[in-house]
Image (cartoon, rainbow, N blue to C red; front, side, top):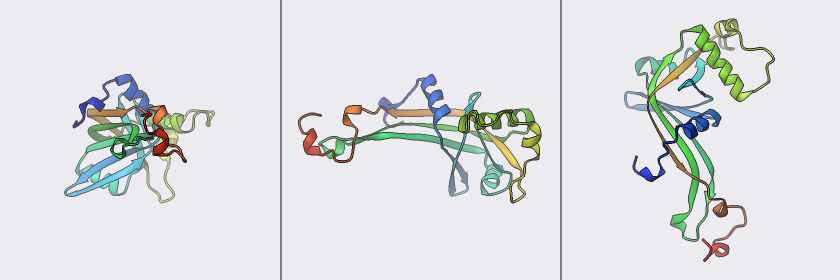
Length: 181
């Protein structure tokens, strides 16, 4: 990491961030062509779980190269400064480097899908997801849904906390901050 002073080593903070962040980006490589897909995900049991169609570009690429990078980043706001080069962003980001595999165990796949439902629509369903639903569901195009597990080999996290007194808001001017920041 080029700026080690921004590195976050707090595993609880990283885990909480991954548990709450809404969108992650799955980075795949196929020869000389990179491919990045935004996805809903869940951080559960020390792994990233996503789901998708059994067919398509993502699955073809994963079959050829299961090594992936999964990135999650959240922008918490822009921090102003009268010196333009010191204007900054409050953020946190995590990069997970690992191996992607299709979850073949129906019990694990169902539990991972339940975790996704718990994250994105908590309390919406009165009954837990059934194994039968996971096993038999087909998309409108007829494709089976698969659950993909990303097992981390390495993980990095960076953060720059948001300084509330520096948060930009519409109408705020550098002249207002001169000599204050």
